[in-house]
Image (cartoon, rainbow, N blue to C red; front, top):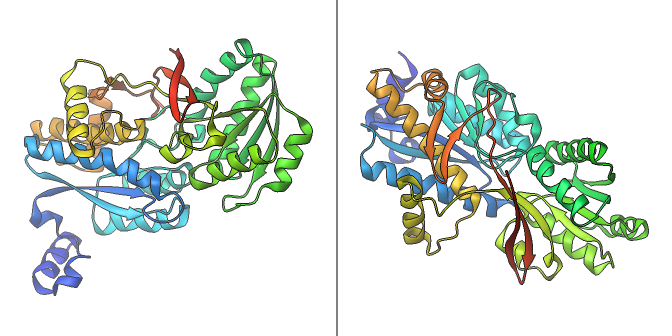
Length: 378
């Protein structure tokens, strides 16, 4: 008896509490899509933001009956940590038989990529930016520019326009932070700026010793490479500790709570450029439905990325259905390579051979609690 048949019989025979844990997708006529986001812990705010885009895309696609079966999102909590993510990934691919999984955070995505390769499951990342994710697995696709692209856009601007050349990097000591250190170092070698660095552990909350060292070194700028609540604490303790240097960061700093911090005033950071004013029907549908669902016309680019991730699945699955091929991970990979260019919010998405995207970047400055664009880099 195969797993699908066994699961179907269990769904009929067992009581409701057990049914909730049983793989019943074949009988329910759905396309299961795994979602591995932080749903608890200090990075829950990211999971909430990511989920808005994915849930809205699934709702819109299901309502339009674009596919013969409905999309069903299966959420698992990574806590933004590799080990829970591995457990979640194994459950999604082995029990739920999901052929397509959404991932986020660099350490998490690195952890699940080998499983994706082994089990032939497509993974789409819309939130992690470590350059190590480029080419990590033939089944991994990144719909977000990676940190080396962000830093390549930022450093020429701050060195030539603002004459900031002595940069202190304060980074969380994990795959993401280490990748930022490497990217900053390489870019500064090319541009003639200088990088010094101080690492902090992922769970740290007291940075008084680091603040004292940075204050004594008097850098032109401090680049903060952390995330969630920790980045807020770092910014606040730096300013409270007398560090007056220009603050710099990457796209992950763009959270509402962070933007409102007095310590974030004047912060300069980078994000991908998303043309929400584009007249194409995909973008307009997203803008209108996002406003209706969440009461705002200015969504996070993270929400855009995960909306686009679900669009990738829908367009690939539709391509397979039209050719009468089953919607499996291996077939979805073939469809992604065959289609190549996808209709997405803000225009189209085309992947590089290493599973990355290239797109314009924005440089923003926080003014009165709101990010304002100061430059766009093609």
